[in-house]
Image (tube, rainbow over all chains, first blue to last red):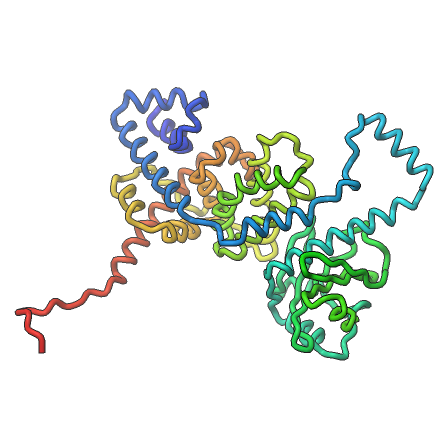
Length: 245
Length: 183
C-alpha cells in the first residue's frame, strides 16, 4: 500500500474511534504507525476533523424545534385502528377477505376520512407553530383574492398549483407530495390556506363539503373540488371559519 | 409506536439531523422544516422499521432525500468532473485555524463547499455514520464517498483559510496616539 492509498482510506476514519473495529482500516493504520510522514499527516488530519466536529457540536438547534417535532409526531401518527394488524399474515389475509366480503366498498369512506384527517392534522400542526409565508407573484394574487370579503371558500378556487410553486410560494412536503400554503388576512384575522392536488392523494373523498377539525387551539375546515383538496386553518375558532365559507 | 419511544428517537437524533440540514439548506428556518418533515415521515411511515439500530441511518437518508426533492425544482447540476482534485496535504496551521474560528464561521464555511462534497463531509464530521453508512445514505459508491471526502476536506480548508484572512482584513485598527497627549 502506498502512502497515497493509505491517505485515501484513512481520510474517512472518524477521530472518535468509532471505526476502530472496522477491518477496512487495519492495514492503513499499521502503515501510519511505521511511516513517520504518513503518521504525522494522519495525526494532523484527525486533529483537523476533531476540531471541525467540536465546532459543529456547538451549534444548537433553534429553541422550540424539539417540541414542534414531538407535537407534529403525535398529531401525524397514524391512528391505532388504522394500523396494519399484528396477526400472522395468513390469518390477517383471511380476516381481510372476510371483512371485505362482508362490508364491501364501505371500507373506502373510512380510508378516505383517515386521509382527510391526516392532512387536516398536518395543517393544524404547521399553522399552530407559525411556520408561514406564501411568497411570489401568484401567491400574492391569491392572497389578495382570499382577503376580499366577497370571496367564499368551501368550493372551487382559482388555484394554479404549478404557477404558485414555480413563483416561490411556500411548499411543504406531505407523505412525499407537495402542499402549498398561503397566508391571508380577512377582517383583521390571519388564516392559512393549504392546497394539495387530489391526484397525489387518491384516497381522499370525492368532492365534498367542509369538514371541521379542532386541535391545539386551531380549527381547520377541509373540502375538495375535482382537482384539489383545500384546508383553511385559523386560531379564531370555528365560527370565524364558518364566516369564510 | 408509543410517545415515549418517539420522544427518545427525537432526543437522540434531532440535534445532529438539524446540523446536517443546516449545512444543506443554509438557513435555520429551512433546516428546521427539513428536520420536522423527516420526523413527520417517520411518524407516518418509518415506524414500520422495526430495527431501531437502523433508525439513525433511515433518518439521515430521509432528510437528505427530502432536501433533494425540495431543491429539484430549481436544481443546477454540478459537474463533478469540473471540480479540482483534492489536495491531501494538511498543515498544522489548518488545525489551529479551526480552533481560532467560532462555530458559526465554521458552519458558514461548510455551507459554501460544493454541495456534492458538503453532504458527505457534514455526515463525516457529525460522526454519526460510518463511511459505508454515508455511502448508503447518499446512494453513491463507497469509493466515490472516499474521493468526495478527500476533495471536500481540501475545499473546506481553503474556504476556512479565506474566512480567516477576510476576518483579519475587516478588523478596524485604531491609531495609537504618539506622545500620549490628548487635545
